[in-house]
Structure formats: C-alpha cells, structure tokens
Length: 123
Image 1 (tube, rainbow, N blue to C red):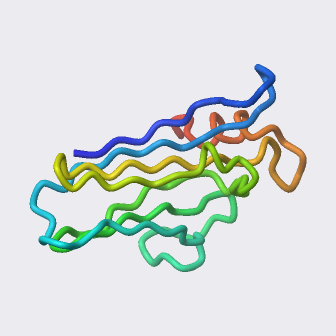
Image 2 (image 1 turned 180 degrees about the vertical axis):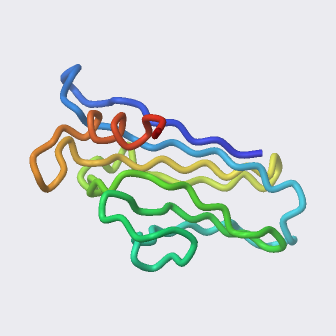
C-alpha cells in the first residue's frame, strides 16, 4: 500500500510552498535492503508522451516493481532541510519520504497553484 499527498507549508499561509509526502509499505522487502527514491524527468520515461510540466518520483525496493508518482515539475527546495527527509522503519517496513518544493516555478507561477492545476482531472 502506498499513498502520496501534497500539503501547503511555509511560514506564511498562501505562500504557495508545497511538499509532497509519501508513505509506502514494503512487507516483503528483502532482508537488509532499504528502499530507494529518485526523480526522473518526463523525457526519460517511455510510457507516456513527454511533457515538460511533469516529472516522476520513483521508489524501488527488491523484490517489488518500481512505483512512480507523476508530479508537477517544481524545483526541490533544498533550503528547507527540516522538510526534506526520508526514513525507513525496518520493523514496520514502512518507507516515509517528504520533499518540499520552491514556492514558485520557473515562470513565476505559485507552487501550490501549479500542483492543483497539474493534479486536476483532465477531460
């Protein structure tokens, strides 16, 4: 079981700063292994036509297939060290990951608005 959600964060409400939060259960992970994660650009994947507005957040753990979340292309805010973390709990076999994104994308659009637009259902 896995989930992902996005939450607005920051010292000022409405700042547009957003974090992606994941929690993934790996009950049958091989002993001594830890899950891994990485970002992949839309250009690297081969399942869908590329789209510069999206990137993929990948999670891998043996013997499982890779899990990919399609997320908006926002820059990771590496200055928010208290909000950027990953944690593997070998007892519960749950991998937790949180990544903060910068409040604005390259065009100046507010991050939370970009996230909402990207995740809106398409017709």
